[in-house]
Amino acid sequence: MSNVRVTFAKGKPIHCGIDSHKETWAVVIRCEGEEIYRAEIGADTDRLINLLRRFEASEVHTVYEAGPTGFWLHDALEAAGFHSLVTPASKVPQVNDKVKTDHRDARKLAQMLEAGFLKGIHIPTPEERAHRQMYRTREQVMKHRTQTQNQIKSMLLFNGVRRPKGVRERWTQQYVRWLETLSFEHEEIQTSMGVLLKLFRWLDEQVKELDRKLQDMALRDEYRETVEIMDSIPGIGVHTAMAIKLELRDVARFSKGSQLSSYLGVTPSEHSSGQMTRKGSITHCGNPRLRDLFVESSWTLIRHDPEMRRTYERIRHQSGSGKKAIVAVARRLALRVRRMLLDKKPYQIEMNKGSSDGAGGSSRPVVKAASSVGAKRFVLKQRA
Image (cartoon, rainbow, N blue to C red; front, side, top):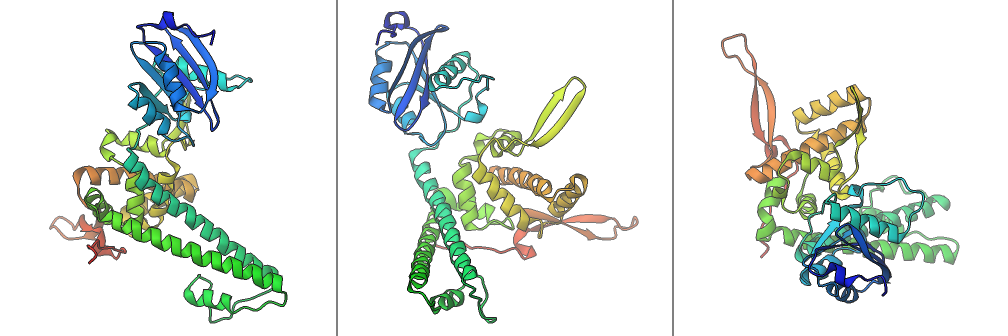
């Protein structure tokens, strides 16, 4: 490694940019504004750690982009005594350059790290990652189940099979039993349908099993209070509350509501120049799973919370888009959830109720708990 300048970096802080991939890592190391090392190595933490220790630096700072490689590299670097930063790709300043290589990406990361321009993400603990993985696996299995359902329906349509009038097409037990009674002229089609039905049955059982695991997890001391608080919101049940908790983790890490909005990617983009200010669509820079959870819950919320309904109708009227309106409601819901969890208080709905106060009869807001307005409720109970 002739490009290693070990003596120059001795006793000085070094900054290492890593462009990580499945098989190889591009590594660039800088010290006091100069590039002192550049190479491509195998994706091996021991090899990288041994390389960094050769420099005998006073401090070793590393950075790589968050992505499919996860956090095991971060864990190994921190355990070795180095300072590791995992930065979101959306927060790395972009340079208009038609030439893109792994080494250039690693060099840019090292330069930005040395200049102090990069921001790190909050790294979940190994236990948090394990719990979150179970929820994410449930979502993946549900997508596979939906895909299988669509394949079955497509096969029925392609072969001209119509369901009887008394059977509802909502994947009830009655509907599945009817599917299992179907008889096709050709054995190949019969076999294909049988395989898809077995796959659907199996995936459905896996979803139910993961549901039970999440329900049990919600009863643990570390989740119970948070789940019960969010369970008071119309549109959020135990599973959604657990999903939000596992993706959001400690809400106290967002010192301001704007930080949470930015994390969700629901902050409007802005293009300003001189006296002109233009607001664009939301940034989408954040956690897409969490954003989708709040948007989906908001559709139910606006049916139960008059204030949120008025917000939705006002923005829909102004923008002409129901999509923009529901995203705005989702942003407000996320901010309310943050405040609820910080204050440890359930969701409250303000109901306008006309009352005479002797001065012409003004309308006073009446605060009600969400559970009193017909929202679907779940009660957490210890299993015997």
